[in-house]
Image (cartoon, rainbow, N blue to C red; front, top):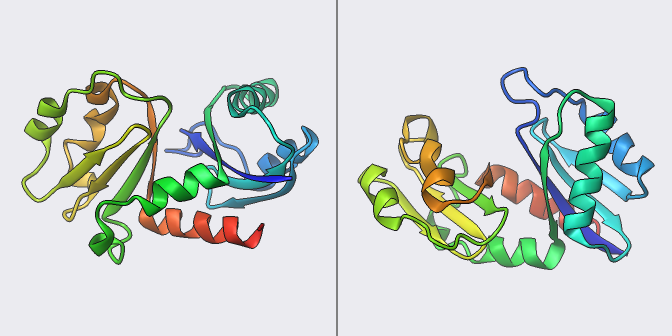
Length: 180
């Protein structure tokens, strides 16, 4: 058995695309996943499963939700090792104590032609970011609610992302450790 992390994009946001976490955990167990555990309503799930193709499982989960609800969310599945590697590569470790100001956005695929100049142009002077092949790290000391960069990241890097603040990342990492 292997440990995986599922990050759902756009569920339980603004009263739309609602799924109770107990129902989501049950649905994931119904498709054969084990030790399913979730954190907060925004769709962060850690589970165990046989060696699987993550893209195939993402599609399977998304389809299962579409069959039961009126929408089909994007689901990013990460293997434990990949998740931990991305988290440990945080280029702003000094900001980890400001867990609501530090954000990690996971890329659904590698950004082939990101507009770095565009990112630099819209970011505030106080903001710092780093783009890697599978993650976008953002330190926004004034908060993401005031950031022009946040709403433009996907368009400027050319791929979809799903982001979490560092508090959530820390909790997911803890949940992963509990399943080891």
